[in-house]
Amino acid sequence: MLPGEEIVKQGIKDLDEGLETIPSLLVSIGAPRLRRLGLSIPTAVFDSPEHRLYQILRTSEPETSHSRYNALIRRLVSFERAAECET
Image 1 (cartoon, rainbow, N blue to C red):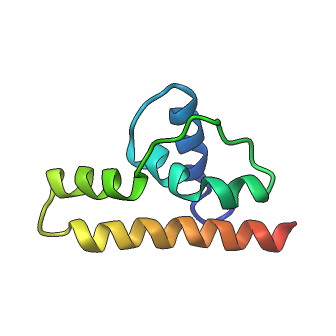
Image 2 (tube, rainbow, N blue to C red):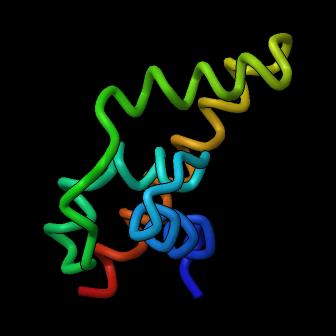
């Protein structure tokens, strides 16, 4: 299993179901690169996913929202890089 693979898989599933979740917003952010890697990403992704993700994080824990946002983005990038090495 690749680093961050579980959150990407969950995000794809959530997007398929039209759910706005942290994983689906991460997949929306990474959609262009994830598609280039050969993943089947739903065509309907969320608009302004970066902003929406930050808003969700800020609502739940405003003091840590910035660091949590950055950690999630690093996790997505980590998955993308690992997936590139496998292709």
